[in-house]
Length: 246
Image (spheres, one colour):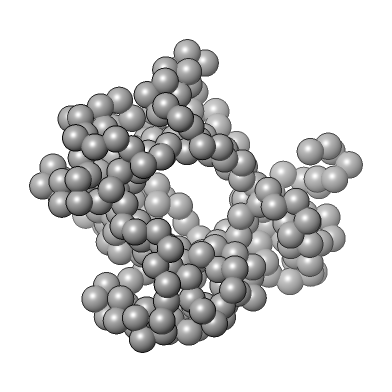
């Protein structure tokens, strides 16, 4: 993207309306929020009552965030993520991406993702960048996750943070175009809603949430906050061996 389109880093000329218009036109930006789930069983019952459709069965994800050894990407608000998925019932840690024990099943898929800095809308033009997490995103399916690890490391990048989660994806019949991910993580269960701002607001309201409950932090930031509350030193956000094999 050229300097004539972008303003200051993290801002968008013309404010929220112009930013979302560009998002719709290009499809290279994601708009999303997280919501904390305190009653996972109750949420599943609500999804059932709402006739939510499960579009992706529960999978076990391993995510590795790659950066230069001194964290140049993180300082710029950027990230490169390699994600691998295996079916949840047979999930175990993959040999290289997770640096743990090998999985007895092949990954369903591997995805390489680049995310840019969070965008913030102009104060005069609404609150898209304040109420929603908006980032440039490019991703590509990877045939061989092991080889991609080697490529990234050959380029001088290292996996500086790893996190695991179980994910199930739903769609609501009354809210088109919104992806609803139910994420079970080592620090709790969350919903992640992705799509248009109006659709996110509608889906969140249907699910019983208010605007004040929107979470814009990444899982890495939430993990660090959780560690501080517990007086623990942040490392990688991983399940115990028992949980990761469920």
